Image (cartoon, rainbow, N blue to C red; front, top):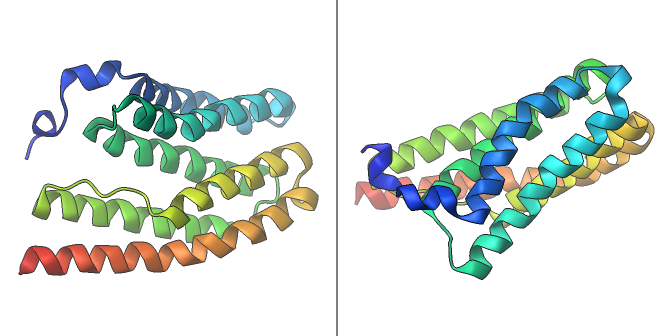
Length: 185
């Protein structure tokens, strides 16, 4: 299956997809700013604005009737790139726990690998579980607090984010197994 079989060029012009693409383009800038302690305020603003695009792209797509395969492909990649990259940088610079970063990377690599398997076997794009969306929102809040105030404010928010994060492990795993079993039948 080729990418052009999955998406149409007009999907590139949907406002929701433009927001997702802007998140992909802003991710390297945001991560660069996060790696510079002297740029803490700018990094905080950039991270907040970049993640705001994640909060609004889905509702815009649904409201306009423009939910697209392109958005379904790019949105989780943009989220994982930004959230995982942020976790790595904050572990290096702001006391974000490495164990949390390792768990996040393990889960997200697993989700992406499973999504590729499902896409190849069933020509179906898997969408985010509700716990995954909540996890992204709470991890974003924790990251923003780590940038603004370090572990003092960020760590309690991280522990709250670990609740839906743990649930997402099971939701994604169960969904993957169900999809693979159905494709084998």
